[in-house]
Image (cartoon, rainbow, N blue to C red):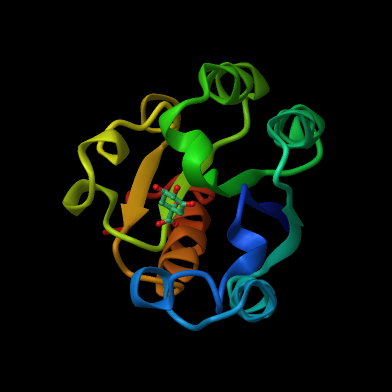
Length: 149
Ligand code: DQA
């Protein structure tokens, strides 16, 4: 069974109560349970980590090398600031799908740039919690080396 890490960054532990008008009312636990169930239906074993600390996220990306077959990453605000996360992904040789609950391109200008996007296989944003499922679908196709058609 292929292994996927769902990695969530800063403030995403507050999902459900944090600015629900922007991020919805789905909690992180609900997202994690949904990913586990959806992963199972795709034949993927999903594990989870959330951290508010950049170094912990970097360590998790390093540790994924040779252990996980793919990463679904919502790096939160580090998306827009972290060259270190970008470098970690570029070094890890594990395919990453970037996810955001909100449509970062329709928000403040500082959210339009992503340091993750150039090193991810793709970016999904604006679909709320559904984006995590879409990311798992995309990884499943990517890992089966098909083009989805
Ligand atoms: C986010 C978007 C980021 O700009 C923001 O800092 C977050 C959440 C999202 O999921 O929409 O923390 O990554």
